Length: 234
Ligand code: SF4
Ligand code: SF4
Image 1 (cartoon, rainbow, N blue to C red):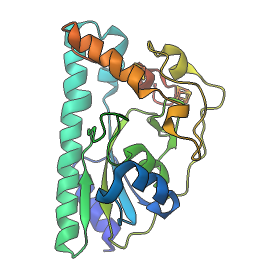
Image 2 (cartoon, protein in one colour):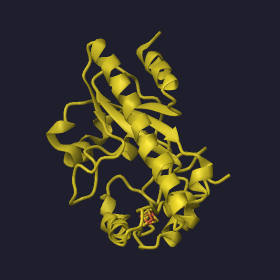
Image 3 (spheres, protein in one colour):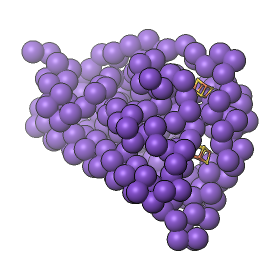
């Protein structure tokens, strides 16, 4: 079996719903600008995704109910991240056994607290792997599950072919995520790979909302931009 088939089998056994491979050469400068020496030198990324439960996401408008917030935090965030990280660890170990370099990037990581981003953009990796487009919400939007998918990534030098072509942005005239955000964090501009994230999304506004919930003793949960996207709603 070819290498990606072996990895796909491992991913399937780990409960991974989405798996793809991206060639990072096309985004080399952006990748290095975000992650620096840690991520430089890896030509490819394996993108892994798990679909969130609709029963959890559909309750987000009622997130002031603590039971709803606790369930979302646990079942749409903490446990999904752990499952992604476990799968990324298993697959990275397998690649190392085969003689390749593999660096798992945690599903939830704020490596840079000033820019509020990770050392590698899981959304960019999934987009380059052909799994979806980056929406006006700055979330990765898949045709089938919308943004209701969490992702982790593995950077590697394993000789894997890209799994897909870049998907066209399909937000069209929709602005639902822009309108629902209680912090007006989105500008409404569609994604362009020659513009910085700040042109579309003010991460500090979102972060300050979470901080204020935390400071007032609430469990910090929002996700309305994820909930509202018509591509994920059934
Ligand atoms: S999580 Fe909430 S506050 Fe943050 S960007 Fe999405 S809708 Fe806005
Ligand atoms: S809610 Fe609409 S504009 Fe926002 S990401 Fe989804 S399709 Fe795009």
